[in-house]
Length: 504
View 1: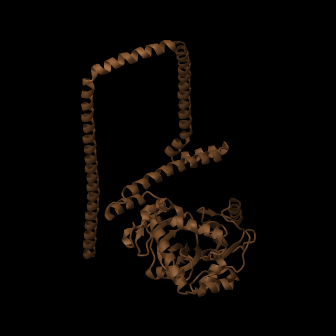
View 2 (view 1 turned 180 degrees about the vertical axis):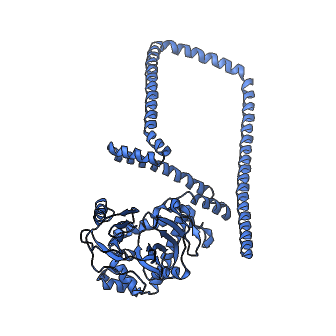
View 3 (view 1 turned 120 degrees about the vertical axis):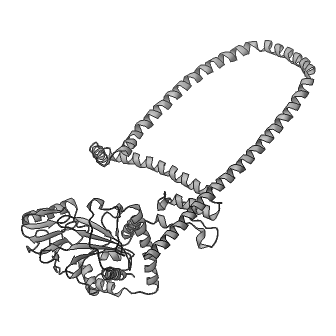
């Protein structure tokens, strides 16, 4: 352990020395540029003095020829007076016209000043909404948006806000791109340091091509793009891909029947589940069951029936005291859109502690094609609490559920390996695999192709999971090219009659 600490300290010291050298390099480069600019400035000053000296010589020559020029001036003046006398009449007319033009010019200047002031006032008034929005807390912002909706001005407000953000973002990107151009011809170390700093302020779609441009075939000639990977962006793009084509392997497993068929193919333990689906009015009245929507995620529409007078609404963290209240709550789920389809199934209620009948806690594995990237442990009783883990068994913060964290118990390496194995049998770069933790071990719960509120991870976690996603895509593509068949996944689709969509 001490040796590892010593190595980490040495690496940290080397990293700090490298950072200091890079900063020194940039400073020296700036000083060199300053000296170069001063040299150019001095050369300009010498040229200016030289031109002045030449001008003085010409002035002296001009002074010596004064008498000759004086005589010539008298002659020209006499001619001018004669011409002025001949043109005196037309000259008065021109003066009168100039006077009128001057008055018109003065009037137009006053109107221009007035219009500029009016424009500034309008801009200030239009910008008030944005300034107010920037200074609002969450509650004030929500109240303001609610009032905007009630006034019927939401579309105008959003269009104005989007336009102002577009202008701001365009200027922002232009400034950062120009900063990158300033260092495009600097040394590799200095350029990479500046580019890496720029990447911290850019979204993936904002990265200018010059930052990843290579002038050679060397791999280290381009700057690392590790920091711009995004889990949120990857999942959003997956949703768009799903809109463009009907078949997505991970979404096939969103159906509970297909999911259980696949899990049975892998011989992984799962709870018993009703063979038929029910509407909310035909749910069988049975204690010791869990009622779930056939299509759903994020605990929406999930109920735990301990007894007829004790039914847990998991999503709302409330206890219902009657079967009628339970049916009413399901009807509310459908009306609010929390559950999209009136199809439900019943499954076995599993306990973390059979003697005390404490419901099993959830263990959710964020899996990236054969690898576990993150683990979420949820304890729902006596209140809902969360604990995040790495695959190595270290507690971490992710930016989600910060006010509801607890010190969980974690999982074993065998359980991590089980989740990784299951994900390696699914031809998709990401899927979340949910289990229930019971006295007998983990029992499969469900798959989630798109975890709820995946955009709420902090930047570090979003970036980390984003890189896991990209690496998983690479591994999956390699296996597909090498002919991996995914036989268990295909068999589960064949069993439910959906193999006609499979194309892997």
